[in-house]
Amino acid sequence: MESAFQGRVVCLVDDCSKYDDQGDCEEAGARRVIFASCAPPITHPHIYDIDLASPQEFIAQEETRHNNAKHIKADDVIYQDLEDLKAACTEASPPGRIKDSEVGVFCGKYNTKIWMVALGT
Image (cartoon, rainbow, N blue to C red; front, side, top):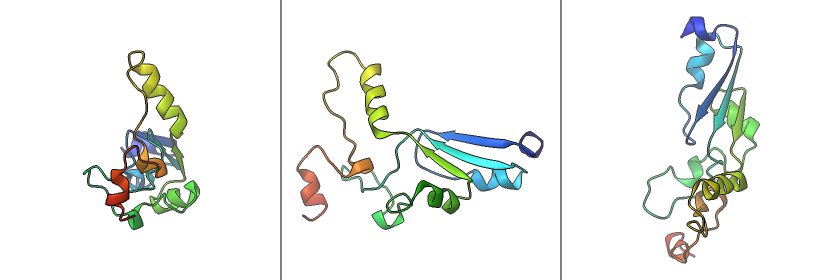
């Protein structure tokens, strides 16, 4: 890995908001490490039984993306735009199949009333 990254700008693209490999790239000699997430930043809990970190552990909750980059030992972080993600999913689906998207983990707006119970409101 060292010879491939030595002195280069490395962009890691991931399909989730999990960060593991940035420090390894820097140690291998990368000049800059940019993390590109195919997902928007996760800022709210998942209330439908998918186990995520607690809200206090979401690095994107209150910080700028530049602070997020420092937190994961990258030089920059690029997140997918939520509206672009929804548009891409709609475009890739058969016409009329997607009426709405469950995006509560990204923006805090859940599609069902269960969120009131799950969040204790």
